[in-house]
Length: 274
Image (tube, rainbow, N blue to C red; front, side, top):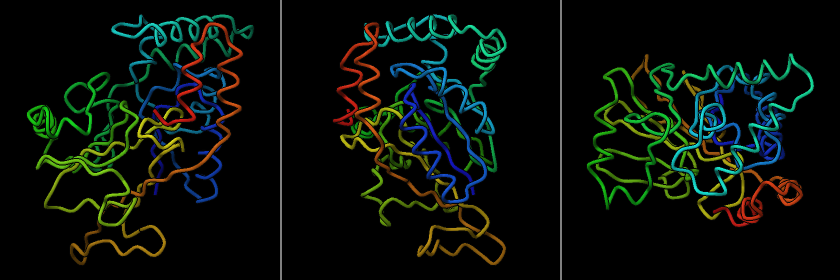
């Protein structure tokens, strides 16, 4: 059993709430799919917590933008990237400053773990390709091509980036967590592959302001009260549970409002989940 988080975006209040819940569930390992920084007002604290608590973190497009240069960003996102860079540079402790930059500069773009490919964005373009729910209708070829990028031994791909949680299948179709057959729970079976967006810790965009992350259950484990599909005497389904939690949005937003370099919209949108 392990947790997968993504798109923290400098939102310390949301990250701390997620970590508290992960500890309450006695989940020992956490993996981060990137975008630790960008948008939010607590980039140093979020980086430190990810370094301390996560087994590994991947490179997101905002992490890349802070370390290198923001490209194809809107004005608010670009300003946030430059502000984040300055905040990291202004750290008075050389050891902390060097450690944070070292971590940002060495974030990998993909990991394969127990048959799960993990990237920030998509199997095709791991750092910056958006897979939107509506793509199953407007651009199905993009979705199908992403599925073709999965290796035979990769049963699913876990992504973030759009901040919209749910499950893509290669029909193609997309199901948000509350429309899955078992609401909020999905089991990966041997006869299909899936691309699963784990949602966002720090800036949800599915009109639900609660933070979102995923718990992955393996080797016969399952959420309480859930019976995973039977696949054989010596085989177990990998089951994912989408977790939604409230956190102190007011505090997170107030930090943004109190930072002149950050656009107020970055705080306002937290209340609306968009």
